[in-house]
Length: 156
Image (cartoon, rainbow, N blue to C red; front, side, top):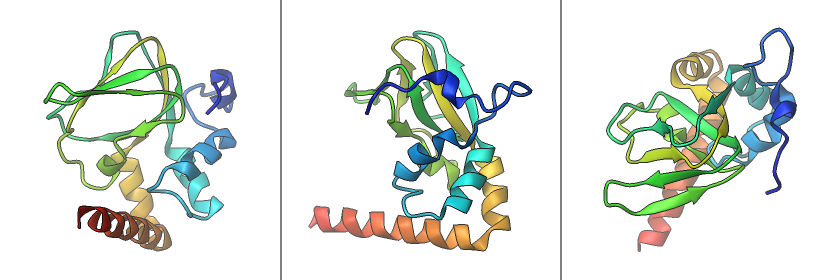
């Protein structure tokens, strides 16, 4: 995926941390949101905020409760599992989507390799949206069922 211009994420001069519709395409690529109607993606995007992290800062820490989902808009980060295995993330990569649904403990640290810009969606606002939009809840359940079926096929 090509580098995105972080300034494109800022939707209004009144609230520079709110996300505009510019990132709907990125949200639509997240497996949890794939296939959702644009109206649901727009509602999810309205919940999102732009967050900037300094080089070397920890975005999430293993063992802490999951309270947000992140999409990398600019920069690189490193996922470090307790086993010591690491994986690099770049623009367009995402992590923590399951936190939107269960808030379970994080399974890895994610550390900014340089300055990082993320689109961040908090789990409490997302939970309110799902309660208000039963059709969104059904679409998410279908997506999760599809992921579970795919995982079961690869396990056998």
